[in-house]
Length: 412
Image (tube, rainbow, N blue to C red; front, side, top):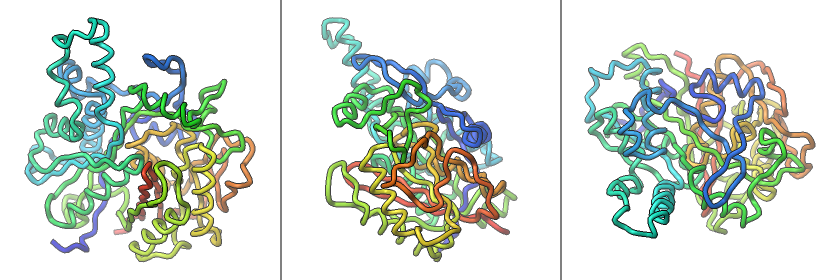
């Protein structure tokens, strides 16, 4: 199989704090609807979070949901939704030629925290420790739960890449299709992060946990009064196919994956590096055979932390700041930071722009931080543009991992 095989997105399955399918989600992004709400978790107490409200029993039985994990449940929901959206005749598919590639961040500690909490009620008598703990905590759990649910017998595993993981799940699916290892791939990311108190406590100790009297206004990237991250759960998986296969079955095509790049800062555990981020963007553009002027939407990773937003704004300006054709937006302002799901969810929210030529805004910017002033930034209201033919999605993560994915409108 040629490494140059063209790969397209033919199905989208997602759950976000403000929508459980692409249509609901997109409508929320265009109407300014946030999915952030009051939230309370053991030990930590009251806080705010992006909480999903999907039907976990739509594709699973109660026993399966109880035995599995929240991340696995989200992955099963998203995979089935993507499959249905793609219109694939699943009964006719060779399941050994299907791959499942799920980006994750925090998977495993949720289940361990929960189990320790439960046995604490029994005076730490470990005879009460569940025998389901090990399969719940292994890193490949969400992808594995998809294989059990759908009968997939091809390669299935998770990609741990901090908050860049959603992009890497998609990228890996594309690469496996190009290598000829699979004929159909589920690629993207999931997150159950709001169910671990440790992530809230950790960000709190770092001075990076957002707070606001109105939860819907707490996630405010680029705003002068931003004060941190809103933790969110969610997931998005894409069905990915080689273009020739998709055309052969008359598939609906959302976009063609045109380019990508992954690199590392190699400078700090948590602090970003604008120079490395800019290098990542430029390399993705080069791989796509484009120039920065060819990119119509740049979806930022910006999480609402002071240093993170400033560094990314500098990187975006360095690469795209000379071009009027580039529109810049941010999705976390609506849903918070969905960690391993962030990259895939944020890309999905922009895909409909290929059809309606509308760029969804970054909300909650009451006063733009001068250090975050980026040319083309879409603030608070959607922007109708002449055309959208290319989208770049950026996702960065702790330990300095950076990723950029470029998709383009498919024209047959």
